[in-house]
Length: 202
Image 1: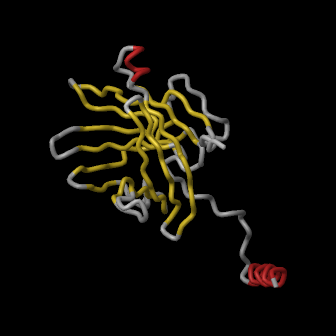
Image 2: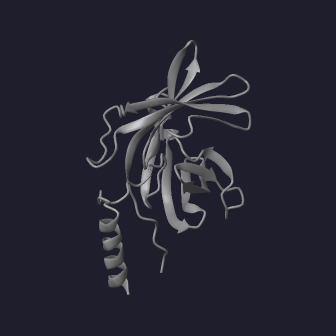
């Protein structure tokens, strides 16, 4: 039955003069989604030791395909403790689950960054500034990783302005805030890799 279906599709393509152009490209998602991906962030404004103490580890703990999109469990770990959040990824959008079961608050809307370039969430406005090649400050990514990302800017009702650079399949690379008439980096990706979840003790 499967072979017959393949033959039928082949004849349909020939009959309509269609040309096979290869598999459809996977839509880019500007967030981590591969289980085990672990990202380490630092605040460049802090002194060396303070920066190390304030490091944040972000890890893709688990992923699962669902009708609502790809469910991604993220863990955030620092010296202060650990918390976990569930996100759903769909059509380029990122949604934070508020009930730990279904998509909820929009983080990035579907269609980002080309079909949707401006949006608002709870009074904070967002806009896409454009694409740029990643400046990783000496950090090396795999040769297969996409170096072209997107800068976006947000502004709260109180006037706080922030710019974030995102890379496909990674998410945040660097965040800047407008301070003293200039842009200042407050969060920067300094390390990445893949780690396995701890094995249960026997």
